[in-house]
Image 1 (cartoon, rainbow, N blue to C red):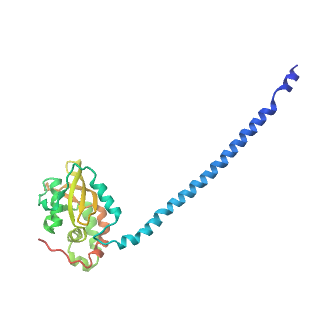
Image 2 (cartoon, one colour):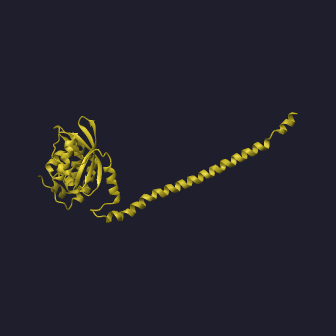
Image 3 (cartoon, rainbow, N blue to C red):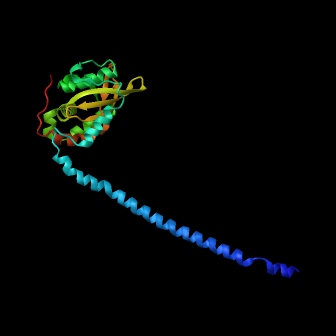
Length: 241
């Protein structure tokens, strides 16, 4: 009886089911490999697209006049100006030398001095903190002798950079103001320029030993000094007002 029951066990169907399952898994594995190959190919195509687009737009950027501007710049300006519509822009004709009692006052003085090319007021509105000062002086000392004689100090070089190389500012507004400590604040500012472009920057201000607030020139700016010198090669040095 036991032998008869053993023979009656459906061994073949179980084996058949296992083979079918194995075949299904093999088919899914092959499909997965195929899909992975497609994903790899798509990634390679996407990685090449930015370079193609960049090369194709070089001619467009070169052909656009200063009065025009790329559609991308105009769209970017519209998008930035649409942010926080409840905050009005402060037009250039309302700026004054507001002093340095607060970070906001120092910001307006900075913009007013740049627009009016007042190097004395501009020098009072910006500052180089100790570590940045050391880096700036050492970088200036390595510049050609003719450049050192022309500008006499790294401060005059930075002033000339801001006044003569920067675009003409038309208006600005403060989007946020963050206090990092009793003598340090960061102001998020949106600038609108006369050529229609709009930019946003975070400017850090610090309170010096006299209690006056100054815009802290970032350390990264010192790395640009050689390029600044090349850009100012044909520009006469500014004179104090």
